[in-house]
Length: 356
Ligand SMILES: *Cc1c(COP(=O)(O)O)cnc(C)c1O
Image (cartoon, rainbow, N blue to C red):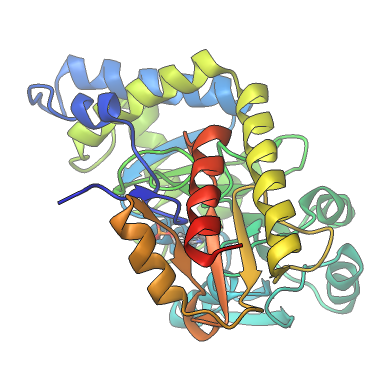
């Protein structure tokens, strides 16, 4: 079957050399070779993300750390910013973990503003705030820089941020923004296969975790750090093949350089969004468009499924609208290792199919 190049917001396109890296001979996860592999990965992540916060990579999808963030950092009261499917997931997880979340709930497509956060934080004492930096379901980039300024006035409120679809594609200064828990998945802008979740945890969050009961086992920040400090490994068996791929990919990202990587993402986003505005309209609030995924309104009333079918024959895949937005909107992801030329090729094919 012909491969469809993935312009969907996860899993993203993975280059062949990275896929091949997974075929290395197996090693034991308690061997020195693994310690070297894993500590090397963590060291490179510290360099690329310019933070010395505790960083852990677990065999899981990003959702594991959404749950982990709640279970480690919150006894009861938290505030969830909800403006799409993934930010809503965090609210639901908090409930499922028997916590007591309040929410700032906006219509899909709207961005969370700093004033909204400040108004709620003034009203009530919260232990944490959850925010999806980049709402993949709507193509909205929440103004994290401005929200971080508000958070600095409330240092007792931990800042938990889902950067699943933005880390490694959009510039996120974890330390400068004062993010306490910053989580991501391998299958988005990292351009790796699914299966690894990355999480950076502040000292403040680690100190808080020590006082929170029922942190569980798999994502226990305190246990993970303890084990890493002692052994340079993860407490349970990791997906070693994926770690090989991650190690190789982080080397390639370092070679490209983060600033260049960010710039490439901005260029791809600009191209798609200019096209999107000209031929359709953007679903996301103006001024808050994501740099990794663009969500367009289906103003022409075309069949998105048919369009994707035609694109499939030509070796491309895009995304329909998420959940309730199916056929009402569609998404083109431009994240990971995709280039502007590849994005242009996709758009040219869409233009041809739709006779735009
Ligand atoms: C994909 C995505 C998730 C879910 O990540 P998984 O790795 O599938 O658990 C969460 N949040 C955002 C913003 C996402 O894009």
